[in-house]
Length: 147
Length: 147
DNA sequence: TATTGTTATACTCTATAACTATA
DNA sequence: TATAGTTATAGAGTATAACAATA
Image 1 (cartoon, each protein chain N blue to C red):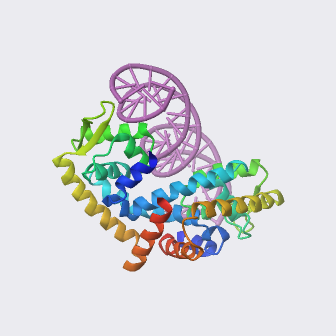
Image 2 (image 1 turned 120 degrees about the horizontal axis):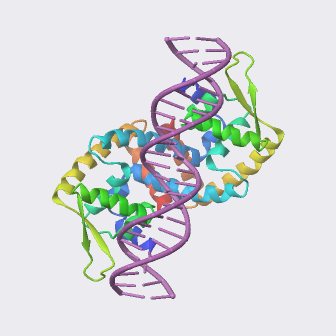
Image 3 (image 1 turned 60 degrees about the vertical axis):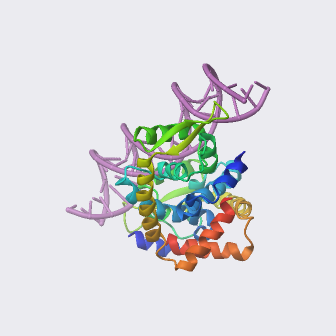
């Protein structure tokens, strides 16, 4: 039944609008990513914060909000959650007492390694319609738009 | 300030995950699409329903839900809204009295033409980092994932 | 004055279950 | 029994404004 609607509407004008294709491609990705993360107690959003915390780049909360296209108030909630789980800590910045730097704990680093492997697997499943070189090409094109 | 975070995290592992790039690329697209639609009294979602209603393919509500990756109950609300605005009508299907076929009115067709032009313009703005051939390539890659 | 992090709040979006009428 | 559409509701996601501490 789902397949029938795809066949019927595949040639509709909408189906060639990049906006629509991005939304649909992302829906595919989210399904696999959520499956991968739920067993680890993470979501796409908390994974992305944990990933930057584990990067060694010492992001501030404001930088996380910027880079992840989230509101600062949402970052508060996500960091709260990760901090309670023991995966990250808020470190006061030495040069500016308003600022927190978010860094991963050892346990957070371990969790991140697990989660990254799961994310990679999920990505492979989402992208299995593409060859390796097509995946690289997609990555490059999306990077140009995203930054 | 937004730029500084991009520079700092651009080489983080996260920044090359397709999942993340899709989310960010879509955020860019949504900003432009919303700007384009708000003047027309539409949103991304109602536009996509109107577009299929205007396609001549006579989608049922169930097919719309399938194709747009939305829940059937959400389609009800969107069709209600479009119907109240006079852009679409629910036509009883001749062969199955449970089923409604959604078709655009004349006014809906006119609105759709306007909206499609606006969407195209917004798409151009979102994709202006890509050449025309790159845009085509992106469309093709996303289509493979999406369907 | 401007900025970081925080709290509170409301609004949109999404998912679920239950209902009706038809098949 | 199963399906199309509908209703109600709750949860997740997102946006906004206001506040304290600091720059």
